Length: 376
Image (cartoon, rainbow, N blue to C red; front, side, top):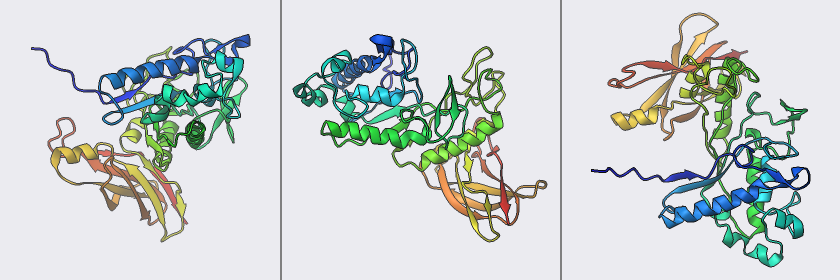
């Protein structure tokens, strides 16, 4: 007897439509300088939206995301190059760089209404752009700190502030939110989309042969990035791409495991993030300790027992770690955000023990990365 497949209730439509290997040509016309991929994606999005709604998958019962844009791009898109995400999004909504609705030949070339009367029908004809559950993005910095915007430096990405105004890496997600709000308002919509981070990670070298930070640095960046995401009220998710890196000559090695299966430092950092926004204080004063025990909510479901995490401290650079605080985990995703006083210079880490009876790690205790603190 055939078994019915489980119902799918989370959808995200397409992947990186502003990337030339997913939709091409990105640009058309003279020097391929007129956006073309937004027009193709708009049609694809409308078709997907109609099909989902026709089969009982609406935003009343399902989450339906769109966008999935890459964070960076080029000034000239060509056929297969990346289009900068905010250029892509403005064209998707049929406005120019000044947020004026496109008209005439520019509108026609981008599949947009050429008249004011046509623009008045745009919202009705493209409901996903105004009624989807959320907008999805891939806000990579790739190989720089998650609190620093990236911009183009010659042919390579490099760090710098304030960053390219059309990029959407993690520090620039609020700009994406403002852009989407403004685009909706142009058509009389009051929608304020949450943003889902659906692909994110840091390239490490090794094994990436082209670009990356050290594996230890990537682990630190991962925890900082998740903390920054946690603090953004409209940023709904944090995603890790990928699990295991591919053997050379592959590149874009953002995994938690090396090609041979050996864990990178990021493996433990992802399982149990730890971040201290400030690592230095005066004696007697407390420091913010933020973290997450990712398996804890599932352990509570399995056992019915409340979970907690141990904040442990090691004085100086030697000796054993001792528990100085036990923190209950009340957040449904396993997050906590507390303030803790440390007795002296040393290192802090988190410890959590899998419930007895777990088939893989029965009674096993796992640890976060360690973070040095200074007490003056």
